[in-house]
Amino acid sequence: MALDIKPTRSELINLKRRIKQTSSGYNLLKMKRDGLFHEFRTLLSEMIQAREELVVTYRDALQSINLASSIEGGLAVKSAAIASSKHPEVQVSKRNIMGVVVPKVEGQNLKLSSEDRGLGMVGGSPYIDESADAYSLLVEKVVKAAEMEATLKRLLEEIEATKRRGNALEFKVIPEMEEAQTFIQLRLEEMEREETFRLKRFKNK
Image (cartoon, rainbow, N blue to C red; front, side, top):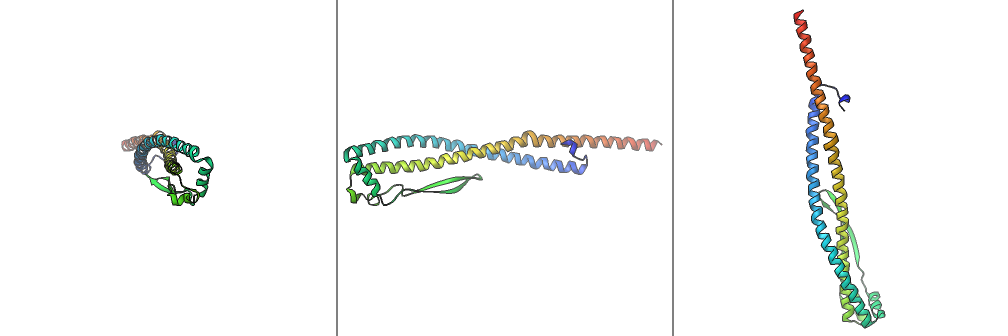
């Protein structure tokens, strides 16, 4: 890089300003990376807990529907599922975490009442009600876990990108500019010595 720079005082001033600006940008990148990593670790611990809860909820829901099927019969359970007048819906929007756009997942009709399920038309059952509630809770857990997993993936991508940019500044861009600064300073000092020597020779003559 030093070979492509003119050894002038104006270039030295510009280079010092660029080094200062780049160093400030590097510090901001470090702060952003540390902040994102903190958010990632916090969300990761929540995600681990959510996964554990999801497994437990799934087992409970499976046990509940097996019980309902064995008592009321598989046909009654299927009829109750078909009779539901509303179905779960998921909407995906966006939210911002420290400048990183991550998905926001919201569900509708995840938990329905007996009237919304239409169980009155097929004959209600406490076992079917319990099974429906268990699966409604399971769907809620799945939606929440999906949002957290997608957010973690997006944060991790941004952390890696920020780390790469920071490393490029720290180990390549800034050292090259500092090397160019040293080159210009040494060249200017050399030119100054040459000019002083030339003036002395001219004075002696």
